[in-house]
Amino acid sequence: MEKKWEQMSVKEKRDARFADWASPKLPDGKDLPFQSPEAKAEYKARVQRYKDVIELKKPDRVPIMVMATFMPSYLTGMLPYDVMYDTDKLKSSFMKYMVDYKPDYYITPAFAGNGKIFEILDYKLLRWPGHGLPKDATGYQYVEGEYMKPEDYPALIEDPSDFWLRIYMPRVFGALEPLKMISPFTDQWEPVTVGPSVIPFGIPPVQEALKALMNAGNEAMAWIQQIGAIEGALMSMGFVNGAGGATKAPFDYLADTLRGSKGIMMDMYRCPDMLLKAMERIIPIAIKSGVGGATMQRNPVVFLPLHRGADGFMSDEQFRTFYWPQLKAVLVGLINEGCVTALFCEGGYNTRLKYLKELPIGSLWIFDRSDMAQVKKVLGKNIAIAGNVPAGLIVTGTAEQMKAYCKNLIDVVGKDGGYMMANGTGMDEGKPDTVHAMIDFTKEYGVYK
Image 1: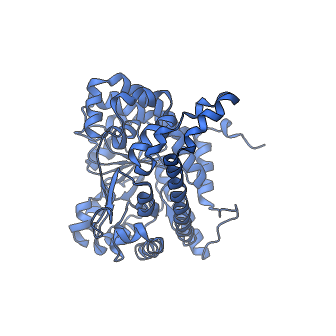
Image 2: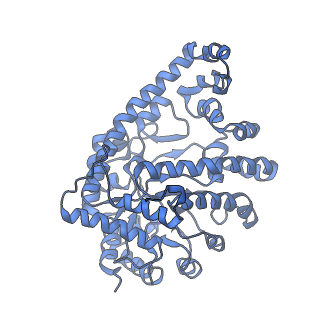
Image 3: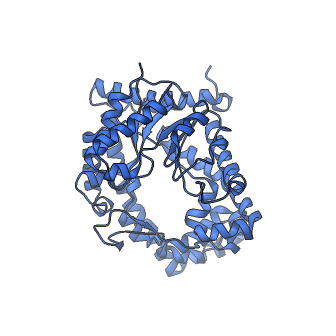
């Protein structure tokens, strides 16, 4: 008799998720047809390498993940604008990149975003190529602001969904501003309240906002079908998507796109109790989001970009008060559900390493500017390690410099296993010779005897 999910140990759950990952399915539930027996074998080998790294074992060789947003388009002669507005170009560009460079794992082409959806909704958080930036811009830019006010904390804590729908979304999407006029859905608690509560949906501006959502939804459906076609084709060729779900640290939920840098830094001093309560409220939301994506994609890896916890952004006291406890709770929650947490440690984490030792097996930490020899010394027996090929080396270095850098990483950090080669920050640009050198040299040299 098979165990129920809630009766399984953490390792049993993780093993089950990896087994699903190693046997990809079509949307109708049938087995994905591979292009060849060799492609099928390579796909399974890549999943096994990832599992070996997570479990601090020696895989057959050091696996390679390339973290990229617009670099695939850059390397194939297209602009970010092209792939944000033309899904056919997105597909052809990404497929050519994968066939030419052949990393073990990639980050979904959906990360490039869709300019048409942003325009339909009048998205205010970004400037992107062709909208606020020249069409030949190499990436997009965040527009920092306090899209959540300090006085909004109680609303967020009381009912996050209502806050997002009626307060936050009307501020960040110009087309959805009229949604601030609708009534809370919780007002529909008796038949007599149904009529009054839906009156705002008869107001023309609200109806226009709903039409904008429908138009964006239609565009999103066409876009995700192309993304799905890319993903399916890549899997059939033996390549593996490096993440199934995504979520963030509770502090970053608030800091990145709600309070902004200035607002969140002030909150640590002016309303620390409210900040802590809000993050506590976000913890289960962050866990549910990550688990949901991993389960839907049949891929155990949950990607977390860490934006505000790096050395220098906050003091050690602030980190252990406002960042680490809440992040740790999210990570443990994900790991307990059999997920693998892949954390993108942007910036330096040299002063944070002692905290990471508190985690159980089930995490991969991708380092950017940390001292990798020290990372290996402190964490090598506790967590899986990845990174830290510098962006500058990829963009301005030579193939020989890249090989020397990767050799040192393999010798120092890859010793005894538990290591994955990866760049240290998301790439919008790159040089063919350095990217090839990073991938090809690792495959040749990073073999465990």
